[in-house]
Length: 212
Length: 212
Length: 212
Image (cartoon, rainbow over all chains, first blue to last red; front, side, top):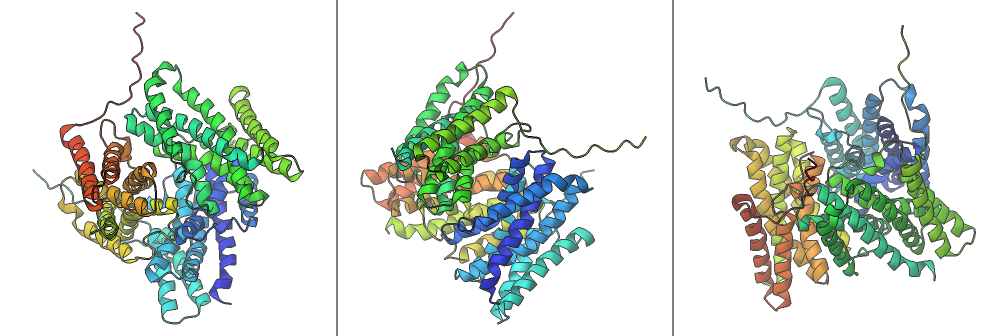
């Protein structure tokens, strides 16, 4: 399987899982079913849409594949009728979001390489594809964007995964394995951050000097 | 009149009415005249701009029709000098926004059909053209986005109108009547929601069980 | 030097200075180094990216010049290790932002003219290139957008500079001088507003009448 063949699968998978997180955020905002569909779709297709716009892929990926919009709508219906079964919807959002990141970053890397982008732009596209849908979801819903949570790896996880993919492809690793390694890296960094507290040092202003 | 002929009129009308709502939001934020023009323009052209970007219509519609930017500026000037005459600016925003939705959704549907989009993408473009300008307005101005107001039909109204247009065109109804029916449906659903409390059931988490 | 030759320099300078403001906002949110890079890049390339999308310049400017992303990353690293040296990071953000505006508006004007835009669209592109990166920075970071600060010239400063450029070019002034005059105007208006309190009258609702 060439990496190009993986794109449709990765796109469908990341759209579906991000759509589930969007619908769960809609449940926290207590919207109606169409509001669920709106947030599921915004979150599901947001990152890949920005990626396609930036790379000049006209029209964007879902315009030619309307089945993706059916998929986000079905995800919304599913969540609308089952969200009450979960004890902690917020923690479910966090874990589904981690899974979606782990699929969306390789999808973004793959499309960028297919469009002839160099390594730096490819890393940027992986990060954008991974983070933008969730950022749009959280900004529109007035939730704290996950990228602002202090002491957690989030953008860093997507950055790490995208770099792994670019390096592996650069040294001649078959594309499909590079994409798998990319996804595993993203998920491992994010999960390690949530479960084991992995993090990078954050910026802290110097404490005020004791004037006493 | 073919539906294509209706586009310029619909675009001008929806840009104008959305611009009025943007200027009214600027009045709530107590900005200066240029701030009014900024919000009027952002709100007026936001939805159609995103629609054109997604469909790959380069450049976007107002680049070739700068008169639209003059129109949003005039709307801003008008509101700057007359907004104090209205007793409830918020309720004026709500009603003008409903009117703008009722014009913008058919405009979006029409452009999507002209670009060769299928029914699902056409419905999505109607919703996007209708909702995105107001969403940008409310997000940038730190107002509660109207799409998050619980118990009101908002995205649902645009969805209903877009579906009506696509179904009518699908069964052979002349395009211009389908677009009129679309706008009437959007406005009726939104007005019924504001005046008569029409709504769809919203998601509610189960109440905690009584442990007593 | 033709104005076209000035674009790469203006783009690099505005990307760099906006990137510094983005990294300073990341320091206020106490993010890690990758978070700094994210905000520096979002702020640095945001305005020019939207400008290129609207004008149909595919792909956007930084896809072919990855050095720009290296530049925003270096700006982020610099701020991460030195921000604690500054007593008032907020006032540093304001002044760097003013400087970035003064470079980004002429860059936007120049690209718009190069793409064949007329005077009104050119002014709009100057404003968009100047304001959008900072707006994205403030919205995503949950800071009060600078364009909403009452009684300060912000959008107005970019508007004034863009109009100066378009008028000067219209009366036959060499492009490079028009761009310099544009940048000086933007900075002078913004600095005069911050230091001397220059402003335009803002909208104020009428005080309620005394019913006594």
